[in-house]
Image 1 (spheres, rainbow, N blue to C red):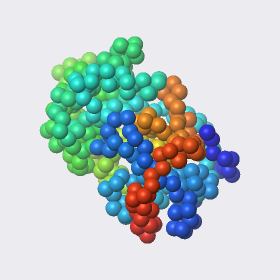
Image 2 (tube, one colour):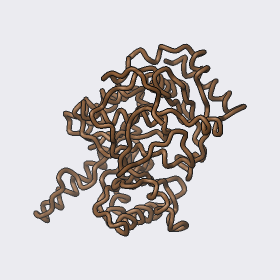
Image 3 (cartoon, one colour):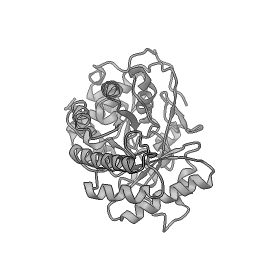
Image 4 (cartoon, rainbow, N blue to C red):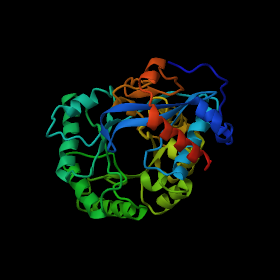
Length: 375
């Protein structure tokens, strides 16, 4: 369902949009929902979010539960900038997306990969979660191998496989894991293998040194740049100043790709500013979801669709997370590996069915008041 028509222009969002609404108005426009997930994601089985019936577009505010008010306020700024600004025109509204495979145990459930991949029709890029607490490297190897086998059985050659370790590995663990997993096929990139930019740079340096040695011993071998690219995520978005963090990460030769999410950056315009900064450095951009519902995905899809405007090299976006929900309030179907950008409105019946009430609603309203003070 598309949003009601509203004035449209070519601007990402007005800088003052986050200040347009009083806290009383926001509380009046707010709807708290709790959506069950098909499989646990980041240790969460039910995703809670606060939706705003904003003047121009429905918007979503859903900082993860552990985030303090100051950090959550960046997410709030992004939501208000989106909902209180008109939707821009984009040259191509269809955004290529990747599939996402959580840290499932394929040995206990051999059919789980097929069940997951059926939700991503036409996607030939897949991000696989690895380094889950309580699991071993062998679990990660088995999971990635099962993904490769699925593509082979489907007759899809050369899928792009990404890993996401959420900064859980040390440098030595990252190199060991990359060796083990690439033994069965190439990787597109490894997202945040270690926690710090310095560690990412060291992983990247050692991978480059290996590639150089191999090229010397086998002249027919060509790496292009590195055999496995490194992507930076948490060390950028968790920074108090993400734009400065991006510059520091790139100056440290720590990444080939930056993974950017609209909510923690404070809005679409901020993400595009960062993309504009990295483009001349030859660093690619992947726009990703923060486990957003179909409403929240609107901002990320807008940003991804607008990357060509700032000269950024885009990747298949990590914005197909709606399929992780048992039921989404505003589904965004995947068509031939792509999702259409643009604002949506939630289904009224589902909005009532999945509404949070009582203590959870009160908790979110109180959280909103505290985050608002930091705008």
